[in-house]
Image (cartoon, rainbow, N blue to C red; front, side, top):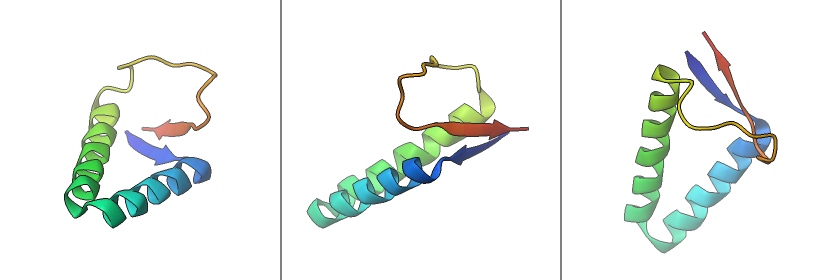
Length: 63
């Protein structure tokens, strides 16, 4: 299953990564690694976690 972030989510992730990199390269790398691991887990287990309409961002899932 492929995980695709919305344009708004991509922009937020990019902004967070740039911010973290300006403060700590290690923190930025950890953020990147965590996001990669999360996307891999969601791809393998799409039913994990919870869903809600209150999230500002959405991701789409395709098999």
